[in-house]
Image (tube, rainbow, N blue to C red):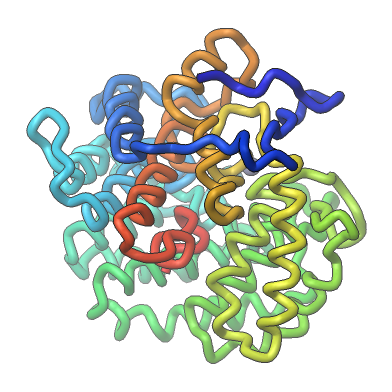
Length: 398
Ligand SMILES: [Zn+2]
């Protein structure tokens, strides 16, 4: 078992040996074993202990993006999909609680220049995940009472730093704690109205360097999906923006990172994979657009299949794991074969894979690989479509 031998000339992706040779398709017979190995790696490399062993940003916490709350979110979902998976006598709900008990309360409710207001904001994410785990409405109140104070960057609308991420967090809280709807619904509509008051949506940390991103990481598609998935009544209000995105698909099947051009990347944050992740749960809200959406997905899957075996460390945001779930079986398992723990370990050791700046979180590292194994094992058990039923952490969860 090893990575493919050849790469493209830029060293961005491995040449897919099964591209036109179905007889070379790899299989993943035992996703559950990889899930257990991946979780064990997390517990060994970044245990629920202080000092925190996370490598990103000097060990600072950044909500669902990076840090212990990010890992807690994985364990929250595992407490639903694999409640009896015990490691060292402890269950996912136990680990979720432990990863939420690492001095997160030292992170203040204020928005900082680096925090944004949502998925990267420790206080907001901590209270959201804690609410989901404990069902205690106190945490929902903490979350809601802070919304009006997140005023530093009103133009942040995208999902990682902006208001689309707030919608995702509120939808998640409602999913886990249905009785929170009474508190959250009016706030959801306020946030959506705020999002809709900007057209076009732009993103950039400097006010003078704003870009028209369209991909899932910082752009329109994840804003649209979060508005519609959180309150479907708004679907007609963003239909024009969605049709605009569909029209921007290139002949190759990809989307460039920005409306007016930009990078030709094939990953979740920029390019076809993230578009597919967002379009799949969106399609049911647009019966008139379903043929167009399905055609766009099929065309996009071709580019993922051809250029999606990335040489970056496998992860959800820009790596093989995230790209795999943009494909259908058996192509999905072929991709995931190359993200199995032993291949990743060997690929990082010999430098063929480019190591991530994070060593544990759910977007860019091991917890994201574990998230992928959770999704694959859920599907193998015949429980449903994991892209719809589980989704991308913090962006397309139901
Ligand atoms: Zn990324």
